[in-house]
Length: 119
Image (cartoon, rainbow, N blue to C red):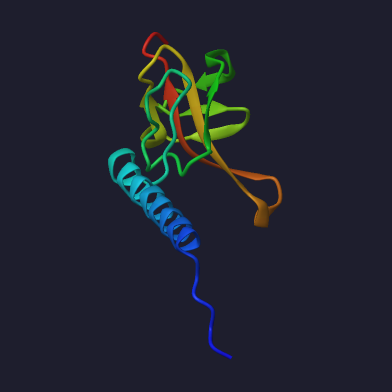
């Protein structure tokens, strides 16, 4: 039996879908190049640096929850951030970037903490 030809409307629909998928992929690559490797934005609109954030680890936190230590490190809810992890926030709020290691149970791994410039 000879194969049936695909209707023109179906071919056009497939082309539109392929072009849409390619456009989304291009957008994602360009955004990754500009913003960083899937970093996301703080609520005030500035982007967390990609070396601190892989996409969902960072969030705003009350500055009162952060404890300063004499050596320049800080702690937040029992997690210690060494001096190299401490950064200045680009807004008046404090932010923390922590991942959860499911292989180690409830272990939380610190990446960065952003302190308000007014602290």
